[in-house]
Image (cartoon, rainbow, N blue to C red; front, top):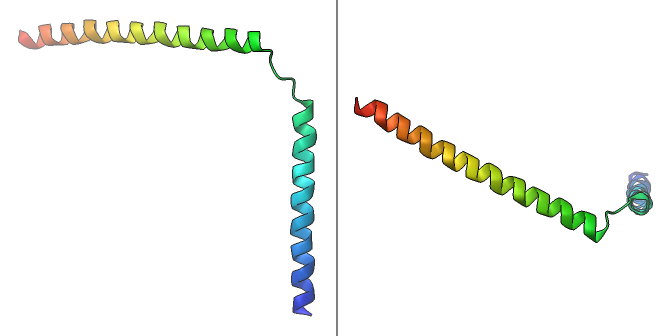
Length: 74
């Protein structure tokens, strides 16, 4: 009797796995992917914003470090 239960559970796992991947495939077909132009524009925007923030943080670091060292010298 225990062997029969194991077979039923294994088939259940296979069936569940098959159903899962079938549903994943169906959901992937529903996705509206961005065009190459939209993707390029978004990528450029992210890179530019990252660079601007990096420069800003670098300048702020230099200024604050200089002020800190000036006050420590007193």
